[in-house]
Structure formats: structure tokens, C-alpha cells
Length: 71
Length: 490
Image (cartoon, rainbow over all chains, first blue to last red; front, side):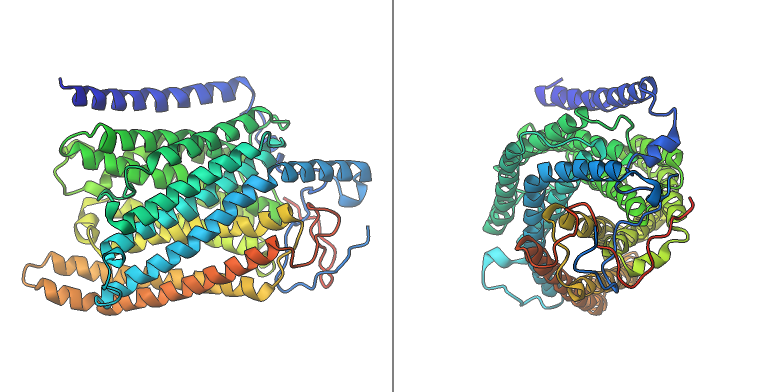
């Protein structure tokens, strides 16, 4: 087996180990840390008290925007 | 679910202050990458127009070697692939990770170094190709002195994304974070391996194109797609104020993409001298991609259901939903294109070019436009100055890419049918395609007009034009004419 062939094999095997191993580690971590325990919490995590569920956060076209919104 | 009026004012202000601090911490590097991306978009658009015109007017700009079709087309791919799309992806990844992790970006100045390195890399790629140093490897056309800059920049970006993730205050991962972490893991690996096995320690014979298209296909599905999907999964729920329809389905979609996508690259070589099992495995992988794509499509559609009227008001939503629809369409088309009977006609034709641009532009670029329309005002503290420019951008981009896709799909399909007919002289096929090439140039002009409008909007926003965002960078100006936000049941 030439040096180039060995390099090719190493790259291919390395990719399989790296990709597959990383996937296995990631899934394992996800289960251990409870990422799959509460899917609703996951879906809600992008919202917060300042941008709660039910409140749209964008609008520009066809809307007359106030210069100042009373605080 | 708590009504808006019941939320303690302190909670709302505290959360807004935290969000403002997060946005402030990543403002510089994100806007640097975003601005660089917009510049390369303009460069790539100019090169694209040149290449397109040359195909129906071969005597256009032929006086210099630098502007011949072969070089201009490769330079266009690098400018829009590694320049616009990738730098927009980095801006997206950094901002989304900071927001989703609820963590401020640390040591942001190092990301400026990454940005400079990336810009140098793209400049070397584009101008090196125009100067004649291009390499005839699809997607890896850049001269051999380019990769070190891109690998270094990519390494810094990937490290910073992971570092921000590790500092997270939000313990629960959102699906967008899965996609972003996947992308910053996959892309450095596939790029380094491809450059190593094609240029630095070249594999011989058929293994080279195999590695080429392993990289070329994976860069679409394991770099651009994850970050664009991460953006869509964030923008749609955030803009309409409604959680994603099924978080379980979104995670299923992510892992299905991770499992199936990397098998599909060999469908680019169907009919070529590759092992038969490799081609078959790639077709299986391509068709299996129906699973994550359907999962994503159901999720996006069901989340939007009842909220499509918001497309009228939100440019971010408009561009993003266009991108989401294009993703479904191009992925279904790609899976079918991989089937041998279909590939027998469509391969090596303009049909494939149309498909590639539906993906790279209709999906990826439109999605990143949507993200920029949401993200930039929140980083600069300024609203977009001119709604007309946004309208011009959207309609030119959407009509342009539609004309592009439809024209080349029709022309490319019949091109394939004629190529398979030995009684049709090649000159007839070339003449047949001329009107479709002309349509592509029309589409290119529209797209370029849209890009110029976008760039003008972007510069105006950075320069401080447009109304200040009231209440700080995270509050959006309330509409004067519509009723107060109605709490939507989910």
C-alpha cells in the first residue's frame, strides 16, 4: 500500500470514526442532560419575558411606525 | 401562558436588558461578517451577469484573458459561495448562538481577525482565479494559496461558536443550536479533508472526483443548509410569536439530515466510472432525504398556519418563508434527480444549474436575507430607512430566481432529451438554448437590482439612517394603525 493510499484510507476511516463517534457522543450527551425530556420547554426557549409567546416581533412594510412609543 | 399585561415590568425590562447586552457583545463581529457578505454579494452578482451574458453573446468582454467565461464563472462561484453565503452563514451562526444560548460573546476582537482572514481568502480566490490560478475542481476552484486563510478563519469561528455555547445560560438546546453546532463541526472537517485529498496529498484517479463531490454536496447540506434551517427555525416562531409546531419533529429532522445527507454526494457522478454500489448508495441516501425534508416542511407550514397574513408586514418573514418553501421544493427535486432514469436526462444540462441556483439562492440566500432584515436593526438600533427599497429587493429577488429556475429547468430538460438523441447535432442544441440563456440574463439583472437595493438599505442602516428603535435595541416599534398585539393561541 503506497503512502497516498494509506493517507486516503486514514482519511476515510477517520471521517467515519469522527462523524459517527461525534454523533453517538452528541446523542448520548443529549439524553443524559435531559434535552429530550421536555419538548415543549425546547420549543419555548426562544421566547422570554420581553418577547413572550403571543407577541409578534417584526413589522415594517405597510405599517406606519410611531416615532416614539410611550414607555 | 401569561398575558402581556400581567408580566411584571421588571421581568420584561430585565430580559430586554439581557438581550440588549447579548446583541451588543456580538454586534461588531456579526456586522463585520454581514457587511463583508453583502460586498461579496455585489461582486458575485457582477461576475454572474458577465458569465450569463457570455453564454448567449460569446463575444461579450473577450478582450482580456481575465474576463473569459471559464475564469469568470469560477470566480462567481467563489464570491457567492465562500464570500456571500458563507460569511452570511457565519454572521447568522454567531448571532443565533449568542441569542439562543443567552450568552454574551467573549473576546469579540479575535473574530475580527477571523473576518479579515476570511476576506483575504475570498479575495485571493476571486482575483487569483481571474488571474489564471484557478483549479478545475468544482467548489474548490480557489488557488492553492487560499485554503490556509479559510481554514484558519473557520477554525476561529467554529471555536467561538462552541465557546459561546459552553457559556450558555439557557440550559435547553433549541433545534437551531443543534444545526449550528453540526455545521461548525462538519464544515471544517469536510473542507480540510477535501483540500488534503485533492491538492495537498492528491488521491489518484476516480477517487479525486469522488472526494470532490463528497465535499461539493456536503458543503450544501452540512454547512449552508443547517445554518439556513437554524435561521428559519428561529425567525418564523419569533416573528409570529408562536412556538414551532412540533419540537420533536424538528429534532427528528436534524438527526435524519445528519444520518442521510452525507451519503448523497455521489449522485453527482451517476453514470461516471465509479463503483456501482457507491452510486446506488448515493441514490438511496438522496431519496431518504425525503424524511427530514418532510419533517421540516410540516413543521414550518403548521407553525405558519393562521399567520400567513403577517407576510404582508414583515420582510424578515417574507424572505424566510420564501426560503423555506424553496428548501422543500429543491430538496424534493434533488431526491428525484438522483434517480438514474431522471439523471440520464437531466445530468450535464442546464436543469442541474437551475436546481443548484434554486437551492443556493432560492433557499439559502433568501433565508439569509430574511435573517439580516430581522437581525441588523436589532444590532444597530436603527429601523430600516426605506420600505420601498425592501420591496424592490424582495420582488426583484423572488421574480428573478423564479424566471431563472423555470427557464433553465425547461431548457435544460429538453437539452438533456436532445443530448440523448444521436440524430440531433450539438449545434442545434446550443441554438435551442439561446433564448433560455437570455432569460437567465434577464433574471440576473433583476437579482442584481435587488442586491443593489439591499446593499443600499444595509449601508443606510449602518450609517445611522432610519428611525431609532424605541426602547432600546430589542423593542420593535409598535404599529400605529393596527390594533395592539393579540395573544395568539398555540
